[in-house]
Length: 101
Image (cartoon, rainbow, N blue to C red; front, side):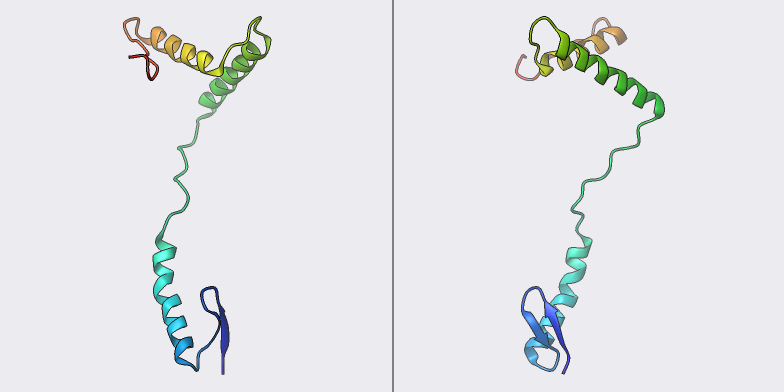
């Protein structure tokens, strides 16, 4: 008599009807669980140029945050950076953070 461990039914024997049902359940349910994708897709890779720009942005962000004469929230810094990027590209573009209209 062959016995195996099932996470749902404990030890199952293939000689019994319970063992057969256990094996059938595991066989049928495996493709359902194997097909699910629990991890989100990876973001596209960042080019070396983008990586250098993001590293510079992060360094400047930290310097301003840590050495400003008054405390400044990260949200204010990010919103200012976004507004500055848009202004650099198009003087007529505007950034409106959520909740401001």
